[in-house]
Image (cartoon, rainbow, N blue to C red; front, side, top):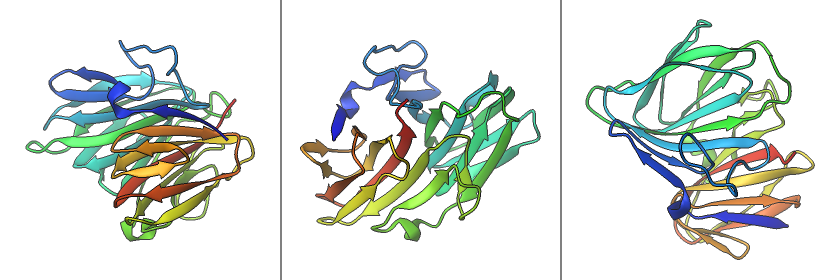
Length: 236
């Protein structure tokens, strides 16, 4: 098993006033040659958007984009008819494909919105753009892995154009869970949303991350109550 440890303190950081952003991988004006991507995972941004503020209309193409609100609500509108508001415990996917323009704004005029946004390289280019969102029951990830996104187009979760699986789990203190890799040759990027966990020799706290590959399974041990996001992606 190979691993790469990314402590929260070494992420890129940009505070624009209306946007406080932390970057796990090189993004915008922050570049680290050792943190350009993890396999097909290109972006993991940890953003807090001020009340009433957001990203004006801008383009994307040939990228699978997943947005996971942690607190507050995000309003989305695009040029292919997709629009909606996503809240905590909801997930949004957008296949940019051959090209799409969209805007994203904090839905609240009084409270900040915090979220993860992740970009994954697609399995095929120039697919038809699409948008979808879904609500997930947080009790379904209590001490078990809850699938949020996968390439499978049924099964009660969202899908995208890549052999990628997004999962969440909320672990109780002093429990252990084994993650089994779904697709041969994939790696897994584990982000600690909150709490303290251990994977192998790595001791991880809030917003620390660990990339794991060249293994079919690995164990996660929770030293406190902990919330995790796991992103399984092809490594090449």
